[in-house]
Amino acid sequence: MSAIDVPLQKNRFGQTRRKDRWWIEPLFVFLGYLIFTVYANYALLANNYYELPGTQYLSPMYSPLLFRYAPGWWPAILPYSAAALILWAPLGFRITCYYYRGAYYKAVWLDPPSCTVGEPRKSYWGERSFPLILQNVHRYFLYLAIVFIFILSYDAWRGLWFDGPNGPGTQFGIGLGSIILILNPIFLGLYTFGCHSLRHLIGGRKDVISSSAVRQSCYNCVSYLNRRHMKWAWISMFYVGFVDLYIRLCAKGIWHDWRIF
Amino acid sequence: MTPQNESKAIFRIWRGDATQGAFQDYTTEISSGMVVLDAVHKIQAEQANDLAVRWNCKAGKCGSCSAEINGSPKLMCMTRLNTLPLDQPVTVEPMHTFPRIKDLVTDVSWNYRVKKEIKKFQPRKPDAADGTWRMQQSDVDRVQEFRKCIECFLCQDVCHVLRDHHMHDQFIGPRFLVYAAALEMNPIDSADRIAELRDSCGIGLCNITKCCTKVCPEEIKITDNAIIPLKERVVDRFYDPLTRLFKMFG
Image (cartoon, rainbow over all chains, first blue to last red; front, side, top):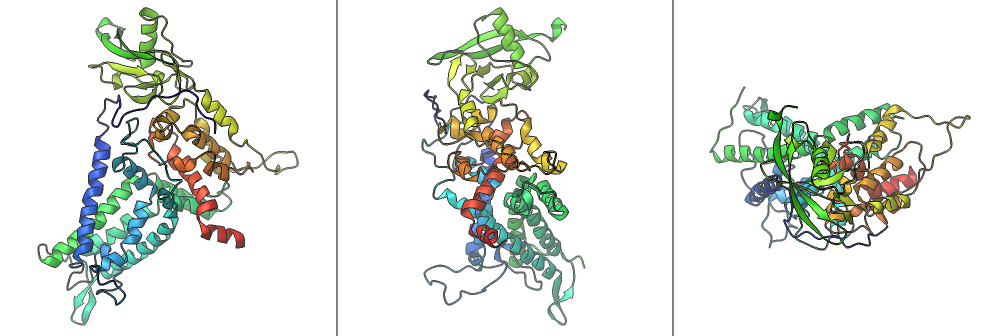
């Protein structure tokens, strides 16, 4: 491409003539990521209190529960957590998500800290070189994330079954935890089905979308959710943490699940 | 206009040429309904006759009066003074991403050179014998959004790849990714720009910070509707073995 033959001025880190409080948004994003990362690591390493006795509640951070205890092939040197076997998939989906990428490049990597604010580094590779070229794997994480929606929907269904006279999980009922578990795949679905990659795969890749009415309708639906992708990204992320916290507090006896019927 | 509606404000305007310059303060009377361009014109008429400013329509449609107002890229003609904190000087300076010519005027000719390098519209064979094509409105709507662009180049100015890293020789910037998207998604166009989008256009350099979308006066969803869909098409072609496999057998 054409170059510019006149040297342009360079901005120092943080230099800007903006007079608004531009740092608020990246600060909140950074704190949001920090809070979730700290809690997710705590929940991951704890490897306990992810189920509530007497119910079928299972924390979404541990679902699906592949191995309750360390399988034989697990390296003895590593502390075992059942969450470690599955959490990489939804986390990978979020880390490579277009919205999250733009947000953490700004809030964490300061590249740039905010629009028209000077950056800390002079070099820049973007997403065309290793390691960030790996972000292109996003659609594969999308496929996994869709599978997780179904798994967590099944967990929500199981959350409606409690221990009864005929054995564990044989009595239908609704507890506050059941409702909390039902909302989880809904929020995750609103986030996942608004994904930019899904929007592309479902119709955006075509120049003529209208040739199939089904494709056009799907594209319109995904586009509708995509316009609110940021909102659902945050809601669904913190809601997963909240569900885990609710089950953890109930399992520890700090909080009690309210049984509606 | 009643005198009660009038007050004074300080405008800190960058004065200089291609090689040097400095901010200079001008105090002028302002009144309700004024935009920054009105104030600049008033200063030009009353205090600084040699102040260079590019403008044309005063209606946000020609894209000429792009500048940085209080550090944010904006059209001067669409920035009302009552949206700015007037208790402190209002800074007005030329766009940072392009070479300065004089005062508020920059040399944006790089953009026109870039545009020439993008593969042109190539219509497919006509659908009808009379040499016309058939398209559904819903397919046209998608690219119609991109045609709202007034080429103010505010998105180019705010893009940190150009603004901070000066990668003009490797990255075409958001404006021309929108232009490429308008061509690439056009139901009639048959040209293939995917390889050049990855290579010479440098789409991989965009890290989706959405600053371009935020400053667009036409409210084009540049990142979500143009850049990311193009990135996904590049992924289809170069980074997704499954899609390639399906295409081979599909």
